[in-house]
Amino acid sequence: MTTTSPPTTRTSADPTPSEGVVRLGIVGLGAQGSAYAHFIAEGMVPHMRLGAFCDTDPAALDRALARHPGVPTYATLDALLTSGDVDAVITCIPHYDHPEAAIASLEAGLPTLVEKPAAVHTRQVRRMNDVAAAHPEVPFAIMFNQRNNPLYQRIKAIVDGGEIGEVLRSSWIITTWWRPQGYYEQSAWRATWGGEGGGVLVNQAPHQLDLWQWICGVPQSVFAKAGFGFRRDIAVEDEVTALADYGDGRTGTFVTCTHDLQGTDRLEILGTAGKIVVEGSKTATVHRYSKPEKEISDSVDTAGARALMTGDTSVLDGVVSTEVIEDTSPWGAQHAGVLENFALHVLTGSELLAPGSDGIHGVRLANAIHLSAWTGREVPLDLDEEAYLAELNRRIADEGQYPQES
Figure 1 (cartoon, rainbow, N blue to C red):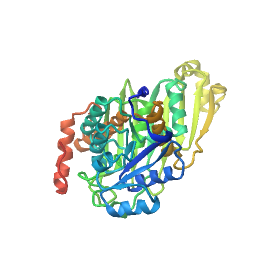
Figure 2: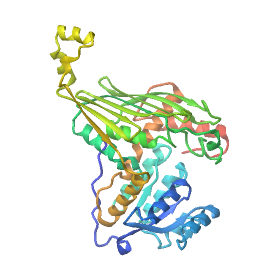
Figure 3: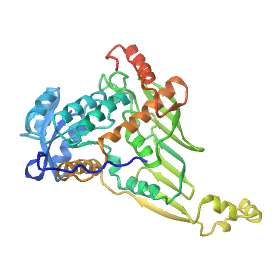
Figure 4: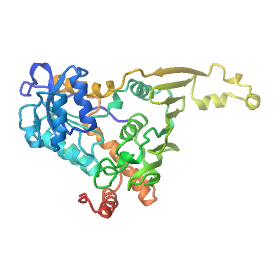
């Protein structure tokens, strides 16, 4: 299981944001950056206020200023970092640019919250994590807002607490990402290997990849099939089916796509002493067994087995108890909660919901799934980064639009 880093201890030498609030610099004013500005302006993040905006697009800065008059704007990251207008930074820019911006912010001594995914490939994330480790006094977090979902927090507590025993199998079908062709055509970098770094795995599904390994553990290896431009006119993956191997016969499956008009969001976690079924990331049904399933099996004799075959389930009376858990948090509350948690960490050193160093886990899983789909082979989670980059760069070169990765 992933562990949470201990809180950073503040000292008298540390910069103290004024008036008990953190002035946030938002780098990138697309959909996410604009949403975070709205949450802060609407008072959804009590210990944070808007410090400044940064975007290379003058029109984006004009739109932000029209919505939030008086907030300073900057056309370059360096100008923002040296402005004195911000106490912390969040990066809301294309995936490949996350590490570079985060590294600059960390080296400037500014607390940094990186948007998901942490990057496109693990080598980028390692460089970013190394800089963060070299500056342990500078807070570093990642926007894994689903870790702030009360439903998934409760599920993780149930699994970590052994309430359903050892996890034997997990299965997540998450296909609620329907995107029409026009979605991909709104930006030239979207759905390209060189501009975005992938499709559904790096754009829509990073939260679920993070939650999957956060709750169920990190697999040893994966074998995947993917469709690249399967149902959309794009180069990257819009269909993925992955089989994870955790060892000792324990497995997991992950299915996702962007062409399912109806869409399904269903997570099942089967344990030795219970089962959890989550529907729509809103309702979880937890089945707890009175004793481990193997003991229940051993307690049913031949007569009882025959009765079961006729539909008589009386031998299982009292064996299973059921609890239903529902999440009623409103839209935006989870993102705002991560922003507030980050602000309180900066101000008081309280524990982070998602330390920035955790960002490598989901990226590593996505990289392994990609490499398996590209090569047709099972790939260990401790994957060969050179092999991954060679395959990625081959596709970037074929596009002929972006520089290759190193």
